[in-house]
Image (cartoon, rainbow, N blue to C red; front, side):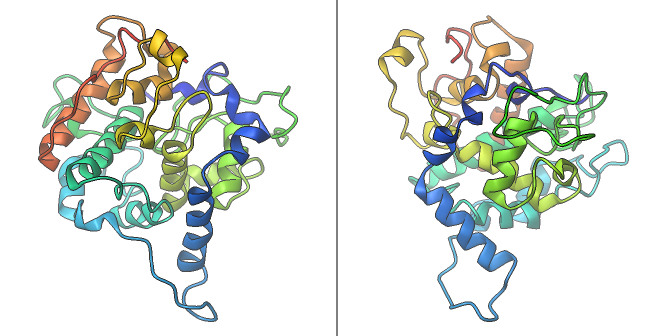
Length: 297
């Protein structure tokens, strides 16, 4: 039941395996990662005291987190006890703009959108599931029965390591060597030699999901910029009807397979999670929930 997102489709994220894209990621992201490492891994000993990035815990309490993911720790879920609240909050500190941009409603809406998208990627729900299909996010941590090892042997910047598989892992189902490599470099693990850590280390798993969410993949904007109102469409975006909203985030993640299709079941599933979570956060979803009339990037 593991999901294959856009990251599993070579055409979707081909921009990620260029040095230019990685170098053009915002300086704020680079700074936040270094700052996060000093806090999470080295502690205060020998490190000059610095002001910690704001925590999003005041917007999403552990009780709310558990209300969102009612069944993530059920015996039926392979990821039982893996995706914990503490790891999510710690990972978010590595990206201080996440959930901390705009007014309070915008901040809550972005968190809800992120959690909705990763829920779709990891869902164990079904139409008649207890508490409904949208209460089963974060049920899986690894792609089930991958069709290949997702090694792009033509990519020399992020070469595959012998015997390793780069199939979907973690909340965003990170896939392909050209994504594991830069994700690992950004958040502090060897993505090419040790891709398994994304399914074995909760904190790193959440970091890869947030790295993807926060990182611009030109010509795609970052999911973060879309949800906080910083997206400025180009002429090509306008011609493709890529309007701001949750639907554009879906386009960024998996538009090559899901967008431009009326009433697509996968898109509707993403929307269902978002609508439930927005209600729990007590915010509206905003406009343009689907990408049926958008052309993929």
